[in-house]
Image (cartoon, rainbow, N blue to C red):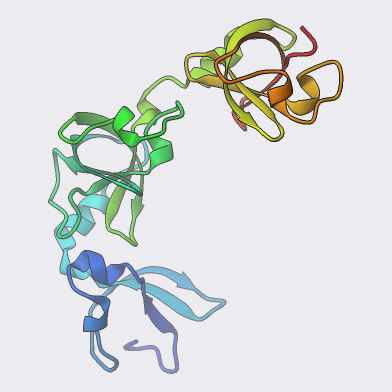
Length: 233
């Protein structure tokens, strides 16, 4: 790097080239580049750089100007196997990706889903909360679920440990059974809480879609975990 005799070593992120719209191998050893400093690792003697910050300054400045908690609106532009792209109503377009906004699957909904199309579809207009600027991809990381009530928090406020609930068995696993006790609320009945006598598999006691009564053993709001018991009813 200019002005740094003997170091530090400047490192350009591996995804910087692709979102610039050119292959990473297009940069050659000995070639001079202009890049913006993203972070400094004093211990390793390295500086993380971004060429994209200088190549697409309008987009970079737009993303840097966003603040955590900002509400952004846009249209779902593409649903990929790794997340959802959103074309924002305001701001410049992305030079490579279908949209500047990006939602990872966990941030789509509080509820469990098998396919993202259960939550969003291409062409749908959405409002999301801005989480952070992903400098590696040049994206605004967004959350769709952040603007919706957390059903687990609502459930936790209205439910007590020891309370008996009705629910439906949704899934069997080697260590127990999952029971849905509300809209988007599932709890685990451990193997030793399925019956008063020892069992080796949940299939010995329940089947998927069985309607059962369960007792609430634990509500962990931080870990979003609900433990239930069948044998204590």
